[in-house]
Length: 600
Ligand code: XMP
Image (cartoon, rainbow, N blue to C red; front, side):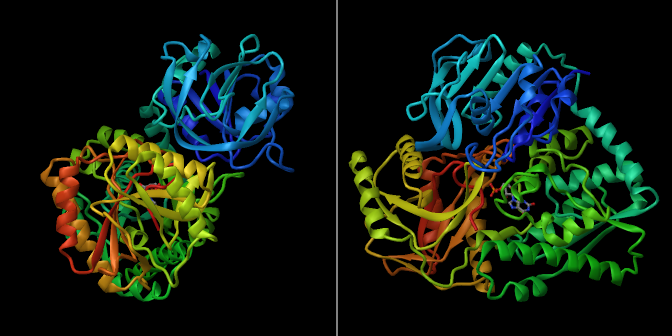
């Protein structure tokens, strides 16, 4: 079988590159960056991934230089593009303007790597450095406004470097670029997902041996597909499900999930009401990462408690989880990667159990769209397979908590500069919010301020200005649009923790949104629709604000803003603003990167 090697420099998308290649029917493997060249000589091509570091930093990851003498095509992406240029005696420096999210690419060469691709393309960027001097023998084959050397090639050696990310679905020509690279590599296409399923079932039988599995199941697609794979491998009697009601589910979701799981024939299901434990453990927790650690570890404690109640012998039972690959990589799960956020299934207690071989995760190498394909192959109902994703920690990550106002230093000066930039729109104004949220920029976690902008506008203007503002001002990682806001006299933080009244408030707001989306038949079109509670009040009205965060995505690794029509937004906003505690309705108009899908 022909194979492609992906050297992983710690980028958020390294694994996604391998997945994209496999989707084109060629087997791809992730390798350590320092893999010696002689171990790569039988591969048809090598891809150098992105990564959070700078190539000119001391101790930043390198590859074996001799890979350039193997006579194999090489494609460098982002950090990989920098590294290739650097090792071939080019120059790399911090870019004067950094680029996060969409950028317009102009292709100015008919290189094979751009075969069948129009010369103007929207590509997805996430970088702080750029190649400033192209190595000898390389030519520039594409540029953006802020990045002249956005793609380079040494056609003779078949070395290619791209600053943007062809592996994210938001780079529309990305699959064609990989197709072209595989053609350049002359790789045969003889791999598919059924093979994954067969191999996985054999692996589970071997790894679990005569043990049994107690599986955390939430009714979402990842855990349900994992449960079905385990049942197929081990038989129904050896797989038990545990559904923990954290109290952070949506309105009446617990009942719906229980019913759906029964309907698909999950027999050994234990339901545990853990509201009390979750609410009391999260009192006085403000920091989002601490919140995540508490939640993840509590899941484990509850599993232990239920195991004890059921008198399950700990040596006979493994823990099953529906972990997918984004959970691992965002939690900083590879050698050089940064931690963006700790997913609930990757907290310390779990890492410990993984080391002790007590965890089984049937879909941990896959992305959401692949899990869905497997779900369909296994015959699970379509409504379940295509349910919108819901994070393990549930509404807990969508309720922001804050102890005191937190503005960036010199925020008034920042606001003046922001408004100078907004003046080019004629109609928009902006205000920095006194709270922070998590983002992902240049493969690193950011924890920065949202900017609210308001005034008459259009979707195109909102999206363009949002990218421009975030690329220009490093204090900001999100832009929200203040729907219906005509003036902001003051913005204040409402002191807040994860109290029950706030959970009820968000459940109520979330239900209003979900009902409106269901009525408009948009549930399937929108990939995910977080509704967020922000302890911020505008103009002294109401205590809290609601952020609408509908996105389109394929695999959660990159996401674009879903553009609801303004009449639907108005209906939702009108219904939300009737609730006395709600001060404003904000619409998140930021892509991922630079923001993440969830807030927290
Ligand atoms: P972000 O916010 O990082 O989220 O863009 C990517 C996807 O992951 C989901 N998510 C989680 N899922 N446990 C989960 O099972 C978690 O701890 C977790 N955190 C985020 C998020 O909803 C989105 O689909």
